[in-house]
Length: 303
Image (tube, rainbow, N blue to C red; front, top):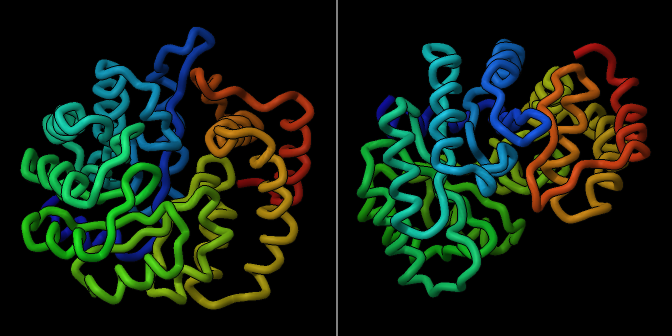
C-alpha cells in the first residue's frame, strides 16, 4: 500500500489499536492474539494499529515486536491494513520502523521519543530521520515529549513525502485548529486522546472526523455505532452512550495512571476474549473495578 493510498484509507472510518495478548508469565500469546484479530476484523475498522500504545508498545522487546506485528500482518493480510507502532530514541525508532516494513506492515505510527525534552528543530530532525528510513507511510503522534508546532510540521511536510498522517494526543484546541488550517489536506488527521469517543464530536467540528477507538477491543459493535452516530450528527445516540457508558467508564479509568490500557484488557476479559495481564509498570484493575466495568457493559448487549 503506497503512502498516498494509506492516507486516503485513514481519512474515513473508525480506527483501533488491538491489545497485545500475554500469558500469565507475561509472554506473548500468538494464538489468542490471532483469535482476537479474527473476532474484530468483521466489525469494519478501517485500519488496525499493531503494537501501538494500547498494545503496550512501551513494554515490548524487539523480539516481541517482531512476533506481534508479524502475526497481525499475516492474520489480517488482504482484509485490514496493519500500521505498526515505532518509537523511542531515533535509531531505535528507525529499527522498529524498518522491521515493520520488512514484516509487511502498511504503515508506521511514530510514537513519542520518551523522557527527554527537545526543541522543534530536534523533534523535526527525529521525525525526518524515521521517515527517510522507510518507504512506508508514517503518521506522527503528537503526544507527551513530542509536541510539534505548525511551522515544524510545514517543514516536515515539504521534506518527507511519506509523512502522511498527524495524530493528536494533546487535546489543545488552539494548536489542533492551527495545524489543521496551516496544513490543510496535506495530512490525514486522527483524534488520539484516551477514550477518544468523549472528544469525537468536538474534533469533528474542528475538521478531524477520524479517531482511534480503544473500546473497540471489547465492545466493537457499540464502538462502531457510536462512530456512525458522530458521523451522522446523531446527538441523541451520542448523548445516550456518553451518559450511560463512556462517562461512568471514565470514572473507573481515571482511578489510576495507566488504567487507559488496563481497563481495555479488563473489558476484553469480560467480553470473553481474555488478553492476559498488563506488563509492569502498568497494573491490572481490581476485582471491584472489574465488576463495575461489567455492570456498565451488560446493558450494551451482545457484541
